[in-house]
Image (cartoon, rainbow, N blue to C red; front, side, top):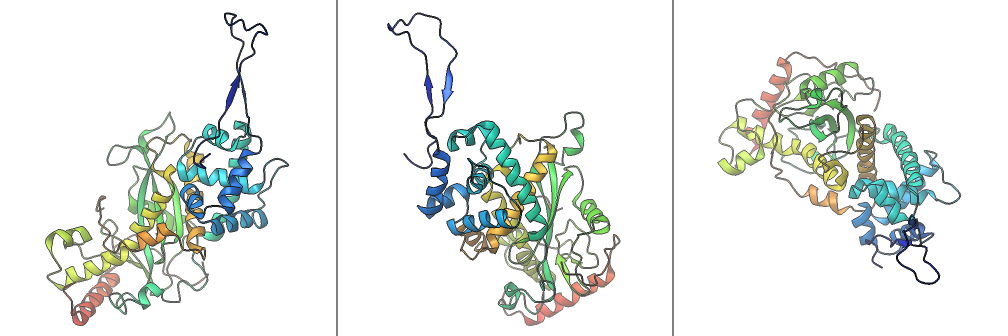
Length: 392
């Protein structure tokens, strides 16, 4: 039987010993006929075809084994007498990777719905503990230039103090029935707003999940930067790249306004024609790391694309956050991941949306405009213009 096929279930009808078929039918009883089928499924994923493991769990065999070990060893994921922790992790990862219901998982793994539901909650709890350790800046990340910059003369030395990019994205949500309107965003769809910061290696270093979709990105950033204790403020002199939807403020470098910016505008209208457009072109290309990070994250976990999530807001926020932890864990793995490899090659990521830690001393977030950052942007613009021998 192919690994992707669901295990067959048999229904048994009590029959009259004389073969009488016109008697009223008795209630049918569903019997699971493949005891241990779930564990055998996991064994095939772990030790047979690495391609099938990746197709189903969206990670390589080595990465999956390391994930299981870490959740058990460091985050106290327990196993029961009948369900090993590897099977529990496989069920959760397959759920978010393939957007499966609990009932579908119960059939695939030959477990009761109650058992699957309980095991999914246990894995989710372990992953939420992992979040605190994996969605944050690594040691030295804000003081050592990223290899992405060092090895690319389009960005060095012009953006040498860039430590990442920041943006918001929207995910569908099932809002509270008594108060859905705050979740209705600018396009009228029911969403939550996710603020994320990534480094230049396409890893999340901060995420704030669950704000109702009506909230503007700038408001979300203002709240996080002024009230959230774990917000990773850039050290003095460093900055995040932001798009034109955010004001240019201390430690947040945006593009020149009223000037072509998004990469698809240059694709349609030709290369930059002045120094401001040249800066914006380089800025947009480097800042696209956050768009590509969102891209690989959403592509890898199909549950995020569901138009009408089946979970309430509180549990949905937990699941979304857990997928971000899985994203970082896979990116940290020593195994090459073809999803990340693909999105790394998309250097000319087109914009299709609205235009809109170490304990180091950091520059506080200032909600007002920042003339010093404008001056810094102008200085970078001049340096790029002087050093450029290319049309873009």
